[in-house]
Length: 109
Length: 109
DNA sequence: CGGGATCCAGGACGATACTG
DNA sequence: CAGTATCGTCCTGGATCCCG
Figure (cartoon, rainbow over the protein chains, first blue to last red):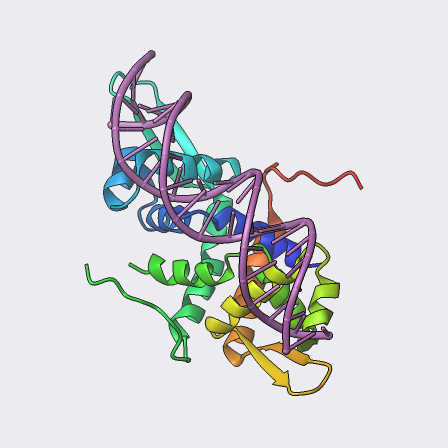
């Protein structure tokens, strides 16, 4: 059944911060750990690193370590990671249509 | 930030059985509760009804009740629900490529 | 600066039993 | 046939402290 393929893809996007991370990486190309941290307000280091690890394990994100005294680690999308962005964009367009009243509770802050 | 839109779309697909339900509904058009139950082996009534409710609340699935003695309820995708299938398909194609070794633990059975 | 380990709360998921 | 109520478990996500 083809649904399994979609499920696997979705499994990789599951996680409170993954799409946000991918979005920033797609927009900026390469970002350091602290860069991502600054750009994603509510995230904790633990969560950020965890989601990054899973993304890396799934082959969506690449991690580069620079053996320097002040540690420096850069994250970026792999080719495969970049390849899924159009699909994400299709989902975005679909979400933007949202014809029915639907739900949505926009925060005041 | 555009990532919010994707997140919202993904939020609607979150849930162990939602994509499977959507897949079956997309493939067959209309299905009864028991039909879905039969087609989705591991699901419990509670989970099935719960995911169906959420899908309905999000405007992806429509529910039709026939006031008969043997209860009959049919589920189907709304126009909006159908509209997201191409995006899901894009994700599917992307997942099918999966060039890197990646993970995946195929069952022995 | 980047990352790991631990402790803790909440919700998703699931098994079972019951109802109309 | 379709749906509800209850209880228990596991995992996700978060706060905090410690390390190279």
